[in-house]
Image (cartoon, rainbow, N blue to C red; front, side, top):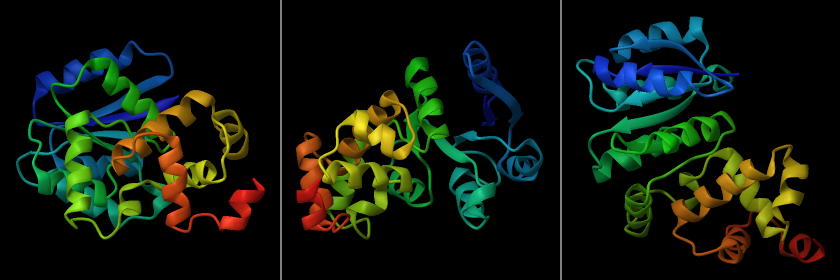
Length: 219
C-alpha cells in the first residue's frame, strides 16, 4: 500500500486529490495539511511514502519543505511530488535539486498524477513535456552541476543497466522491479536528459563513466 500525504493550502485541491487517490487500488491517503510547517510536523508520525506538495503556500513554501526534508536521514524521507500553478525555471531546477521526483502543473490530468504517485513510490519520475524541456534547457545553460544530478539514484541504476545493453526485462530482474516500472524510469531518464532513445541513453551512461567500457562490451 502506497501511503500519501497531501500538502496544499487550498481545501478544494486537497479534497479533489484525496477523492481521486482514494479510488485507486494500492494507494491510501493518510493525511492532509494546509501548511508546510504542519506537514513537517506530521511526517514522522504518518510516515507517508509519497508527499504531494504545493509549491506556493503561506509561511513555509514547497521549496522550504524540500530543504528541510533534504536535511533528514534518507531512510525517513518520503518521495516528493511537487504540484504547482507556476512553471518557473529557477523553481523547477531547485525543486529537482532538492530531491523532488516529479514537478507537475496543477492542470495535469488526474491519471498522470496517479502515475506519478506510483512511480515516486518506486523512486521514479513523471514529467510533463514543458517541465522536461525546462530542465533540459537549464542543464544545457549550466544551471545544474552536471546532467546526472537531475536523476534519482534509482534512475542512475537503470541508466547504468542501459549502458550495459540490457533489455527492460533484464533490468527488471537485475534491479528487482517490474517491466512497467522500468519503462517509467527509462522514460524519465530520456525526458530529463533530453535524449531521443535508449541507445542515446546507453552512450550517455558510458560517457559519464557509469559502467567501464570493457564491462559494457562484455554485457
